[in-house]
Structures are given as structure tokens and as C-alpha cells.
Image (tube, rainbow, N blue to C red; front, side, top):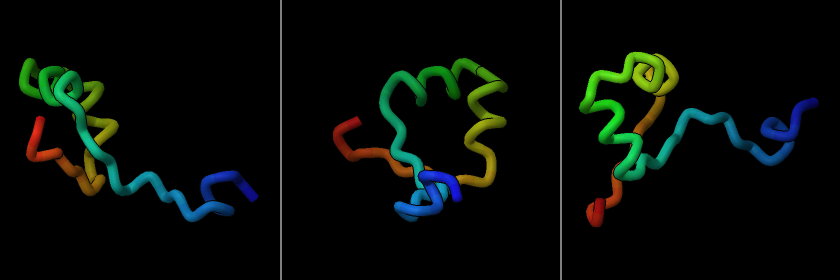
Length: 46
């Protein structure tokens, strides 16, 4: 059993910071592929 299964971390919920948003907006396809299908959250401060 993997650690994320034990503590209940599925990796489907991700909080994005400013740097990640800038990578996405600049067209970084690698980041976009990693985040595809995930529940993304952005802080209202960001």
C-alpha cells in the first residue's frame, strides 16, 4: 500500500500558486498535461 492511499491523498485536488498559473498562461503543455482531469483551486489572494 502506498503512502497516499494510507493518508487518503488521491492527488485529484490541487491548489495552484501564482507561478503555476503563469506557466499555464504562457502555454506550458507539460504543466497542462499534469493538471488535466484534476480539481484545481486558486486562492482569491493569488
